[in-house]
Image 1 (cartoon, protein in one colour):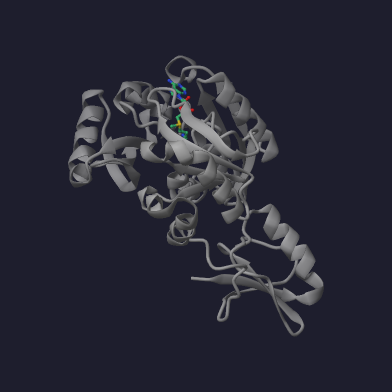
Image 2 (cartoon, helix red, strand yellow):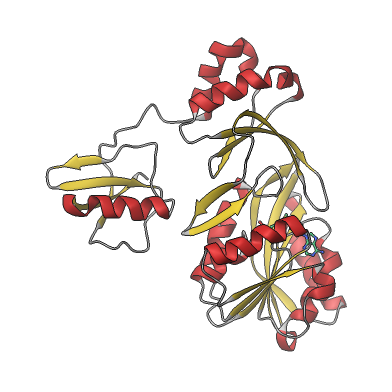
Length: 341
Ligand SMILES: C[S@@+](CC[C@H](N)C(=O)[O-])C[C@H]1O[C@@H](n2cnc3c(N)ncnc32)[C@H](O)[C@@H]1O
């Protein structure tokens, strides 16, 4: 659905600036003047604006240029590298103004030409990064700047939150966007929340900003990522509700204090389950348990998780489960919302 915010002409500039700051403007469509009103294309409905507005489905959108699609990219890239453009797979991710693509090994020798092309192709790209793989455990992305600015630290805006990060040095996945949005909508009012694998605050910042918790403790083991986490807490003005702690969550998370635990780390998460259960206040609460599964085993894995929790001495049920994204052939990143107690 192509949404637009309609405001009176005299309010247009104020509304535009506000929407720009919240990262809500859809830059693929043009802002259109219609008589005394202005239509500003948006990616999603704003929760509020400092001026009166209505939200409409745009009937006659005008595109800034032909819509940016991966198909169009491949078509135009043919003009640069010919048929080999077909080898490009998997789309792109735009994190702030850093454009990330996965390059198959065969295209690496032409990466500079491809990068320069992408820099011209995408109006928001300041740097183009080719990503190979993400190493397990601490998840250092293996990435190379193939065109544009070599400094890839950027500001990424999403769901009314802002994240400062360097996607070449810390993990931030476009595929997790829906899960980040879901965190903002959790019924967590007045709760105490523990984020055991905080990263740069991907999950706990939207929660802290929009779900009105009483306190959020965000733990991150890697010093560099922890630095961004602390910055993001202050950029989002969440110091009053959110605390960052450096260390291994198994060692530094307190016991018996949280109503909700985020376990956003899917490599053998069962290792961390005893600590997550111990952190729940009075042994009760909700755990958001991320893991890797085969799609057809989604429910079976949920059953196994409940059993594992029972072996640790707690009663649990799965209140919700969903696939977040594909991770590898036949391996899916899934999340289970487990109600304990
Ligand atoms: C995959 S990122 C996920 C970030 C965020 N939770 C999300 O789901 O988008 C996982 C983060 O957990 C951190 N981490 C891994 N093991 C940890 C541990 N034992 N204690 C605290 N943080 C840990 C990593 O450094 C990394 O930043």
